[in-house]
Image 1 (tube, chains in turn red, green):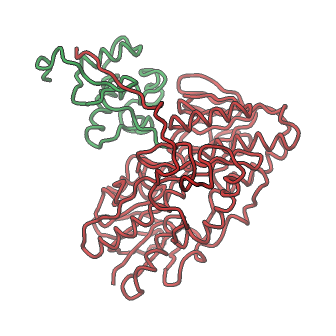
Image 2 (cartoon, one colour; image 1 turned 180 degrees about the vertical axis):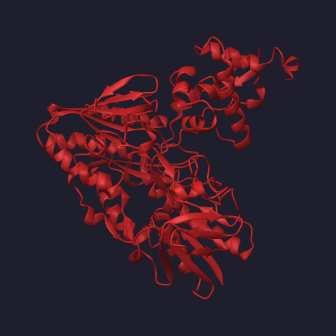
Image 3 (cartoon, rainbow over the protein chains, first blue to last red; image 1 turned 60 degrees about the vertical axis):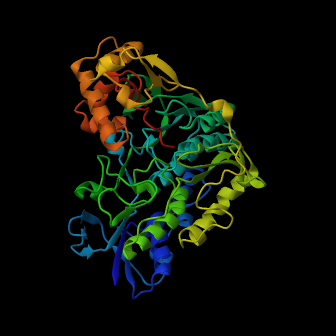
Length: 424
Length: 105
């Protein structure tokens, strides 16, 4: 009887537990999922709560209900993983020995890592929509906001769903227009990146959208201090952006127990992970997926979903004593809500940046990197797919785990040449 | 550093001036890149960061982020911005002769 322990009952942990439960009979493998509570949040829904487009009841369900029968959910905080003993020590005093460990505990928000952010004004005029209380508070605060400077910001990468703060800015533009007070709200998007986004083609298109919607873009602004009393963000290089209301995405780190588990995480408590096999670099019997890893791709539910097939295959191979052959290509796919009932879609992987074209293939029906109503409907439909296909660990019909080039327009003009310099 | 053997040769750089091959690097080249990017002289504090960056990259294949530098290089973030104006991680990587830190989406 093999023992599989999965840390985290979110998107990745739930999906892996269900996939592995289908793969192994109950007398072949015992599967235990550990999480600190029994509340599974549909995280993409948090974006909609501040604008009154979703309520918290609609996006939270019991974790247990998402797990197939024959999977044990153990509710406790995790103290640490003892890699040399192949055991997880839980805060409730129990220990869980494992043959395979899967780390799927995502990220933890660390607002206190930014000077001043959790000081005066935190959750009064400085908010985040990246957790349930913050999204709920923002719904009340936006409702009462009747004009002034609203700054949308991310402190630093990596963050979950890197397009979400942009979506917040787009939806804020729509929201205040609907309320008839758009002309009284000054919207500013403040980012540490050198553009609206990380990859050149998408960055250019998204910067264009911000400009169209009258959102000022401030780039290369690395926040050193958030001053809630004075209403200003101060960068490390001493520039300032004033605000009446700040909506920020705090710094992210891996789960705190990762930092307490010798040899498991890096200095930010992310788990160093081989990007294709998803095996941790710490130990061959430890795997990781989703936001918890350090693989160089977005922290997003779609990434976690696309990792599922390769990881299931590799866990099976590892337990059978075979070479790992499952290979994840970095496929990611995100809808970007742009307000007024429209959305953009991007699709990319480790090698290919988001390109224009059509998805899932040349005949569409969804346009890539272009606003459309169909993409917005896709985003809404995704919530259903999340509970009914993604968490159960099923493929989404017509969408392959690896990225397809068919439908994408190659952009040759962006290939820039390097050069030579003289050796001194 | 086997500088004389290759003296007079060309080294390859990418469109933004980052060395394509980290093994082409030497300390004289670092000083030169620093000057071109507005740092007239590399002080021991600069070197502490540049060397940390380079060692970490050669060890792990990834350049550390600003937050990792702040936690582990022994130079606090505020000072990193004074030493390497605008983007410390990017500029220290360039001076250290390693590829531009990959901006993850």
